[in-house]
Length: 123
Image 1 (cartoon, rainbow, N blue to C red):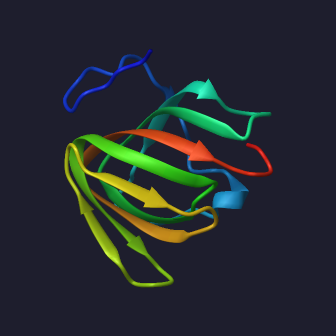
Image 2 (cartoon, rainbow, N blue to C red; image 1 turned 90 degrees about the vertical axis):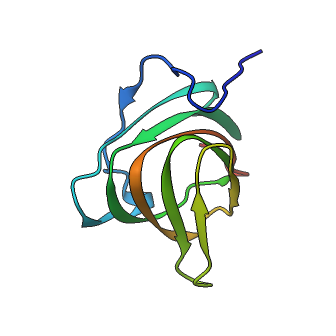
């Protein structure tokens, strides 16, 4: 069993550059840097779970997989570019985002989230 609580030290993470062509990243403001770790599943699986951290900045991306996330630290806004809906997230808040959703991440304070993703065709 893996357990995370808001504010916990999540341990070492690897750099996750904004270079996946399928995600079509567009940096809008600042110089955000992402890092993360897959704790379960991943390439070759239809699901994955892990930790993601991102520094302040604003970027657009296409989400890869249905994802349920919970914010552990920091503050951000996630804007669905199709519907215009805005989710403002702080520690303890959760959000579900659909596969292929085009979103803007506005990372106001460095964010750490735990996530579970599902992708029918696999990662």
